[in-house]
Length: 212
DNA sequence: CGTCTTTGACCAGCGC
DNA sequence: GCGCTGGTCAAAGACG
Image (cartoon, rainbow, N blue to C red):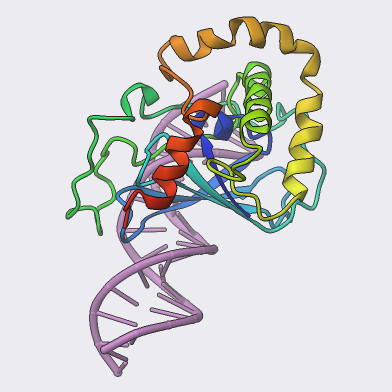
């Protein structure tokens, strides 16, 4: 399953992922990060996260494998799971960072902005989840004719899972509808890139953007 | 102390 | 066979 999501959506992933690798990918200015489910030891679920070359605010996430355990509700038992270190402040990733190709083949240690990020287990679950709920609703409203501009679904299992997950936050929806805008005007994102009105532009960007 | 991230090394697949 | 590329391993250090 391949999915494109924003950093907020990435952060709202309620699974516990442990990073086990990062590699620079040829053709992409951003490295690819490899995560493995750390909730259960024998869980075979994995995901790969890389930034979209066309839009650095969009993360291309590839899921593989199946979780062999139910979705964790609390991760407090994990020692280091609460660390939410955003190494690169996402405020200015939209512009002004044009990665220079050349010297990131072997030495990926250069802390070029956006080279590393940690979407694992943020401490803002409730708010983010409620926000994502709005996102999903917006997708439902605006993406009726255009199937997939930001989110490409290959498997329906995760859709159902997300539905179940978000349904739990429905009751806290009031503050996200009224104050949801504050989230974006507070510096993280000036405007959500996936509003229905801008979907056409995104679709054009992904299809004919000429990224290759 | 347990789990995390980081990061270079290692391995397998592929094209020439 | 060789080199390139992508995926994984594992040691070392950091964090709560």
